[in-house]
Image (tube, rainbow, N blue to C red; front, top):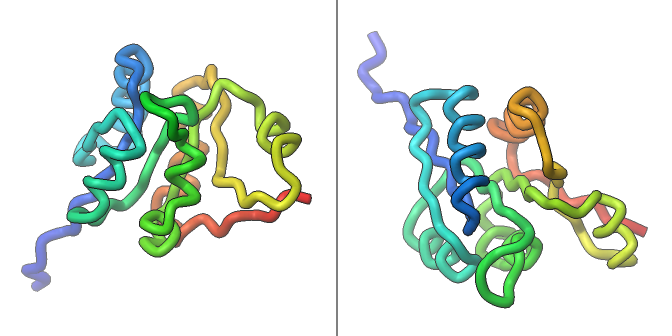
Length: 138
């Protein structure tokens, strides 16, 4: 008989918009009602949290409080070395990010607005994976 406790899945959500927080919470609860969801509103808060906690998935909005974006969090050494799956949410289409860079690695990007079904499909695909290896955009 296995007496080990199941590992608790912790999702760090980096979002500063209260309406989007409600939507993301609803979507995550549809994937797994037992998730522990931790909320922060900026890249600085996310990095401080990640220095002392291990998470199963990071979901970050592109536009956040302060001068740093979800893309800055993706490119931080803290996230790169943690090998934690990462999903970025943005109101900009993926093409916007492709045009902005020539060799910049991009995280998986879910474009707003999204439906519950789109969120579940997209996030579930990254939830149990190893670190999403960035693709170099040329």
